Amino acid sequence: MEQDRKPSMQRVSLGDVEIEYSERGGGEPIVLVHAGVFGDWFLPVSESPALDGFRVIRIRRAGYGSTPPTRHLTIADHARHAGALADRLGVPKIHWVGHSSSCQMGLQLAIDRPDLVHSLVLLEPAAVGGFAVPATEELVRRFAGPAMEAFASGDIENAFDTFMSGVCGGEHRAVTEARLGGAGYERAVRDSAFFFRDELPAVLESRFGAAEGRRVRQPVLVVEGAASARLGPLSRQITELTTTLLPHTEVVTVPGVNHQMPLQDPDAVGRVIATFARQHAIPPSGGESRSRSDPA
Image (cartoon, rainbow, N blue to C red; front, side, top):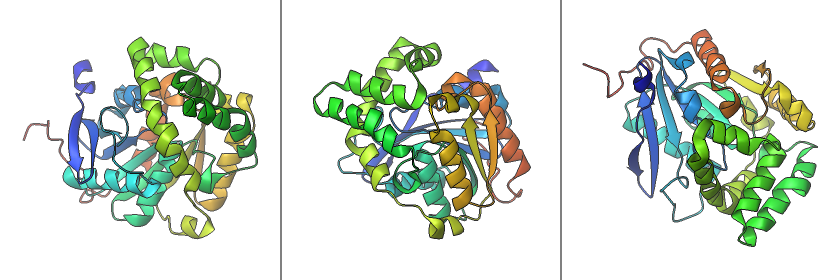
């Protein structure tokens, strides 16, 4: 039923931080871990009927919403938090779905906890830090750099618009408001303070090379948006780099969307995730678990 796809967020303490999560359904666990900037990127995907039949766990990471951390968080920290939540929920294996910066987090967790991460779906990994490509320089010069300057001056609205225009195009606000509403857009702007203050530096300082790539043994799917090419060569370059670092990676291109794909076409993204998860099913004893909300 429709209301079953709209679970409320729950908060959990993981030592020095708190994160929020929602879950619905039963079956193999699909863990949706949002990109940087704001915390509700995957909200529409989590509610998509394409993911019916799975246990859908959506994480709102530390630093977003009402959970400000007291120290700098690295990519490895965010990965560790997701792993700790899986442990808390009694989930032995997961299908990780990441977007932009959370792709690096998923790869880190796949290396640190190969017993936990069964497969990875990566939506256009962030092209900075260990995944920097030739087009990264222009991204930083034209968008990320000016956005950071605007944030440093106290103009968070301009910082948000500048950065999002660079990675998602000039219609990013209309897309966000269409899926999350005006209040959702305003929340996204507020959320971005953590991104500019803490997460963007964390991604820039991250490293991932051939040695790390060889340690990732799980099935990996890279998802790119066909419309990302209109914004420049960044998406194609990051896909090529990812498939070089992870030679066994599969690639799927979703038509009509760009880096904002979880909001532009959540059902199409959900179908891609579900198809890959079914193709790489978790062994029966390795991860299918009953949601806490399911009847015994």
